[in-house]
Length: 447
Length: 173
Image (tube, rainbow over all chains, first blue to last red; front, side, top):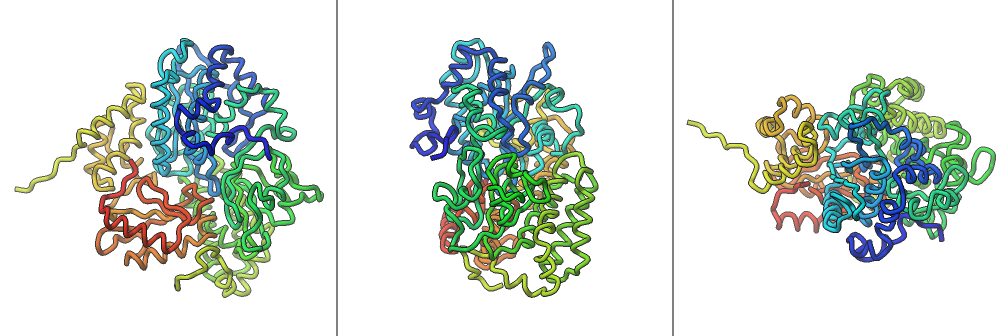
């Protein structure tokens, strides 16, 4: 069995309530932090743990925390990024729905470490039922003296609020999230200044993903050194993986970083193999933004070594033969899947979600969707493949925020590894209609 | 003489407005805009008319344009009237792989309206949306704050029948 730090108690009935959560070691890290540790001690433990941001970028959390400016008399804030919107990713939703108090405990401990007295959890608006779960849990925590004034008699005060988004992928980008939390359109800000210096309302702010904040709880409980022993190399600890697509057992799995990809896909402990005895064709390993890899490259690196579920191993070979761990949104596709059609759904997504601020992204995402539609409609020519390549190459690195890259990378990777499929649709436009896109519904409705 | 209905939050909504405003420093009340727009949409028939947005602007003491530009940016705010139940069908990647196109076609046939149109009985409207974080339980749609997952045609029939009986406008808040 894989080591579990976050989803240890998620199947216990009533674990969403404060009472049951506390019976299962809940809020131990808060007592330890407030009674035995100084704020900087916690930052030190997080640094030692090697924890990296679990939202997708993988930036070391302890380092991010240590950048927080602390000018006299200016309030600081911790904002939790629960705007989970990367296609293929649903782990934060699972965590907040099942064990809301784990996030709240992590928020209190982390706020204490950063010296914040008012913190926010920004949840994507579509997750309104989750917002209600969190608000109930927060109410329980206030009633028990775990939030509010003088928490557990420590003299530390914290107010914690939940903020709904309005439906915008871009608000997962931390400065767009802050704009949104200020009641504005979610347009990412120019950096510098970074949020650590000028964030929410111009005040020093740390923005962390749900899973990152939850991981602070086991780090404080067991110590940073112990956490760093789990995992492999610089990929320390555990990671929540959202597994979906054509697998037997879709769902959220907590893995110890370093599990071989092959084991993750085929073992009954995780995905349980590909449905209907089909063969695996390709995997998007870390959410829609990361490069898609064909079976041979996702199971083994170009050097022939087993590919592991870790930051380093998944990116081995760069984008030529590798990919990224990203948010851990793991989408597996069987042999009948049309890579081009799936890519079209991604391109439509990014076009819809581009905030429109930077021309390369606003125009480029639209063109990519349009060109891919030509392939779907059987109207593409060979030169459209090169045109598509050209458009994606003109977005990367030319925008304020990484949405541009996120939109370009999947297109580039699909052409890089599956060019033959694009060519096939040009030579034989009918073939796209012959692809079996459907698993469960078996195409029962006539067009 | 023509009479216009006064736009005003119900007493319980007014109380919620106060709770929302308490979440921010007094001089940062614009932060309440998104929560207030959600509340307004729920209060006023599931969409945001210009007078409703003006009303929200007046509560926050900001210019109406500051509300319009925000309401038009986010996909959850409807700027036109909608069916009593807005069926938001996810169509991205994993949902597509698991048959979201069939779900849309089946829904269109069942409610007798194309995507984007309100059904003849005013009850339903299909809206295709991007990833709702339900990839492991695809295909799915959302109605109000409820997720309906692992959909089949039989399940859809039951869901729509139940909603017809319930006959209460869907809402997030």
